[in-house]
Length: 66
View 1: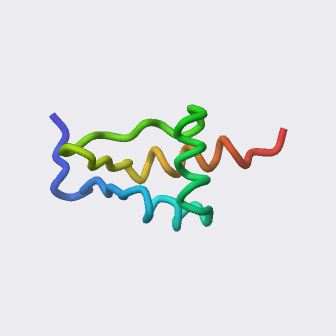
View 2: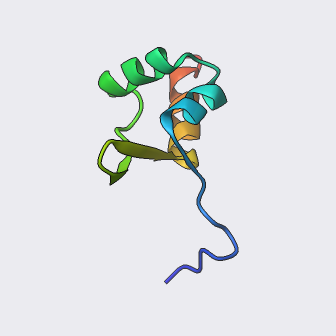
């Protein structure tokens, strides 16, 4: 079992995730709807969060040069 006390996970709400990606909130939701960003995790009714690793991974995929 992994001990997360030394490496806590960071979660973002939609607005904060959009700011990290330097995009608008509506663009963030569009990317989620298109499947380019994961749906996130529901923590209560109407509240979703995204892990920082997932946001970083999505950004790398979106902006990778092919």
